[in-house]
Image (cartoon, rainbow, N blue to C red):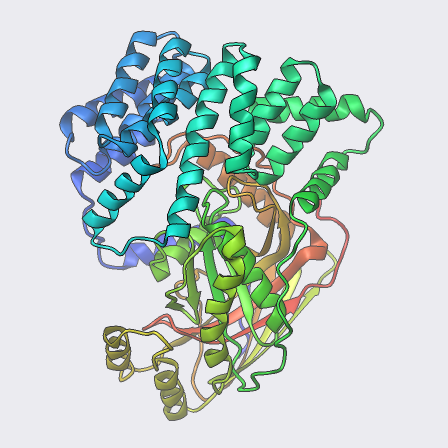
Length: 578
């Protein structure tokens, strides 16, 4: 039963629109959410600010209120820095909205840092930052944590975790004051603060960025370049600092090829991350016939995603693609993400991924969370305990996948699918719905209730890049198995028929996909309903032919449980034309 499909990013959006039009009308969003989205979608800064002001008056008790105040200050600083009276008032509102004690002190430090970044109201910034630096002690931090966890009715973290949280918070406060002093041209006051921050958080990208700016002001170009490079691979540089880094590199290496700076940054990343997370090989240890699909919803601006990213990559490498398939879906959460795309956003909505990082194994949410780079090994161990159970189960489907290139460098994916007869497939689905270690009784009961419904399997194919280089705010430079496009909406896929042998064919055009991704990011920069206009370091997406692969997975539309997965590399070819 051959089926030919073509893929583009906007084809996914069109298909979803068609499905949505034929489905029942979605429930109306709350009024405050609609007003917030309408305000943030305003492309004109003055109109957006007016809409945010109107929101503040009409929805003062909304959960979006604090976010609206933060957005208003950013608008004023970026587009209207001369309106200092309004900026002063907005800073006052933002500080007053924070809970007294630790929360308010930390908010003062954040406000001071933003004022310093814009070079506006520096005396006010100094006052706020100094008060925060004097006020944020470990005792104050612990009282703030006790209040927060008491309100959440949650158990307090361990002493080690609390001390780690304090050092992070203290570094934020110290660096905000250092930033203010640097803008005021007071190097003798800046340097001691940078040294204190280095003892608290030696991998802080803001620390390195401020060191770079200080060295640049002192005309120490080599030190400035080294510091900016470190900041770039541990986080995201501001546009001004990135431009300074590029100019310094060009001055130091006038004959260097175009990609020399990125190669230098790769070396800097290795220098700052000397130990890779390598796990023992588990390939072939679970010959159950089922290849699990591990899906990670992540974001380059998500700090706890750092540990999750490294753990997922290391675990997938230890199993190998025949025994475990990994997909990374990037989301605009909590910050805009240039690796996100319509397919990744749609997949998150289908599974209800919500926040990042979130793991799903075979379509089912995992009770495994993110953390720091140092916690990646523990995260990988928690993942492995559940993955091993799934990998040992019998496969409900046989799925053979291959990928080739045609004369136009398009990727041709061919999937041969053989499923059990309907009754055996139903039994396999019940087995798939069985609880994992640590599952709650409620979740297991719900799954078994659904197991009596007819199985409705579909096949989805995804084009992935094995390794994407991008340094975001969370300090992860290389990203694995990043989904770039799907052959059909990942909610529905292509229908399969139990008991039959079927062949499905999909065509991916990398040149067209990368153009669609560029258009998507540029449109997102101009208008979106969550952040307002944003700026990505680059929207020039280039798919590397040597890094491409195809993933296919079969899932049940009634439960979204994945019943089989497969991976195939794409043969290398010439670079995709820009």
